[in-house]
Image (cartoon, rainbow, N blue to C red; front, side, top):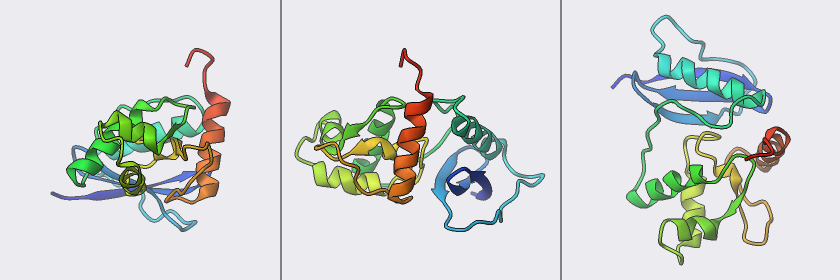
Length: 161
């Protein structure tokens, strides 16, 4: 399977989107300032659509995503990652909440580990998961980005959500 990359310059840094002709496999912060991966003639539409939807998210017009993505991980990790989008835009949940949601209440630490390995940033909203005491805990993209994303969602959250 041929993989493609496209960079999107967000307000919180360059995001590298990786995918195939049919799905996105990675949305990760690139710790660099320059755009390296520019859409080409053969860039699959799913990558272009992903970048467009991320742009809409960052300007406050999109709260949900509608392009195909696939996870690469263990069954447990995939269960955690599938539970993350149940946390609504502008809301937060604890690692314990996710453990309960996947019917494995005692797996709080394992949920934290799986959350940290999420490769579909923002779209699979691991930034919405916080400590049981309400504190912000680790984020692979950096704590400052987690804070920014949570504040951004609070700013653009609709009253009915």
